[in-house]
Length: 143
Image 1 (cartoon, rainbow, N blue to C red):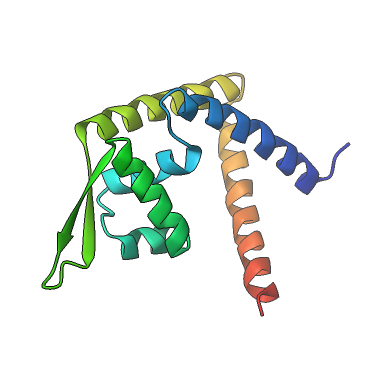
Image 2 (cartoon, one colour):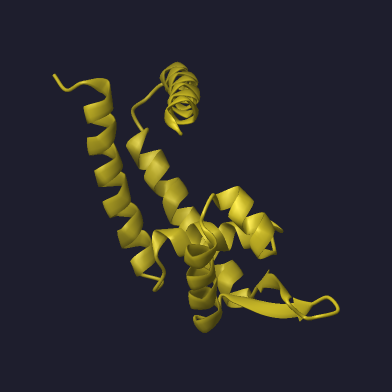
């Protein structure tokens, strides 16, 4: 039997493959889809997006540029010096995000189809606990 962390790594690989398939149908990467969701939720500046996504500025800029090029978001310069950009999701972006989100929910329903409510709740509790434990490890190990 695999260790818990080895099993999580295997599950993550399968999940990433399935997510890539879903997003690729709409000419997006998984990261772009997640970013599109953040923008659709009102997180509309690079500063806010960087905090929420924990992406570095260059990666975030590249992904935002890709979403603008794909007509998923628009950008508008604001402020006196026009250096701050505000991003807004387009109708195309809203529709695409909704379609991918629906596919994601269907995947979740399929995966947990034979799980009872108690089993789902227990898994959620354990995953939240694992997330906190992993966060503690990350902060302890950082220089």
